[in-house]
Image 1 (cartoon, rainbow, N blue to C red):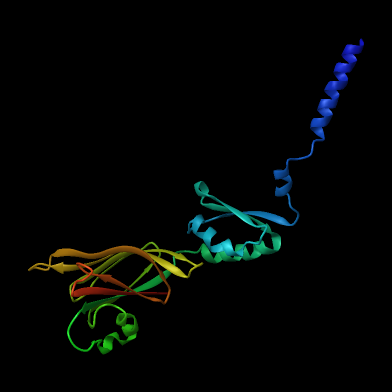
Image 2 (image 1 turned 45 degrees about the vertical axis):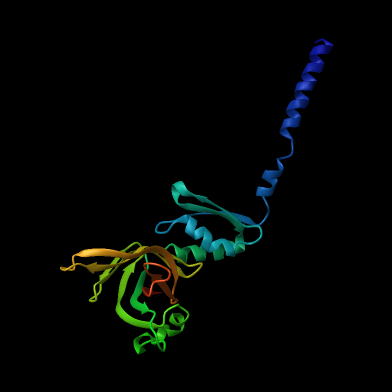
Length: 233
């Protein structure tokens, strides 16, 4: 064996040896921090992105998560002792659709001369109404609709008003439920067969809190409708 072949074989062995014992990349070393656990949570009833928002505050400083939309799952990396809290929160979150009640009240508002007038049947919302630019109010319809997450809601009031919407998803992080495509309409016409839309919106309602939405033809209108909404379990 001549000297050139010997040197060539030594060089090849050195190269192979260097590849075998090279240090792992820094990223791989970071992924293998001691004490960290990785768990994949697949959701049956709820959306993974909603769960991510709910557990974000539970993660430790070493924790992280990634959403897998194709499988509706969430991959969570965190310390083993903290993973128990995450699993508990996700277990509470990923349940069958929950039932809620939406209370809807229609209030007529106007600007009139004289002392502000808020009738007794509106005393529970008098403080909120007092800050609005009207001084005379009357209740013109109310109803409570019950349904589960994902259910449509529809109610016709005796005064000719209609509330039409869809129960959205409950968000445990904010203790609120989405009310999608809420539309307040009124039956008009001689035969009460024409539906006039007065307000349409989508919003999140914190459970137990009172919300008041206004609908008027113009900002300076002398008359308007106030829609009072309260979501409860």
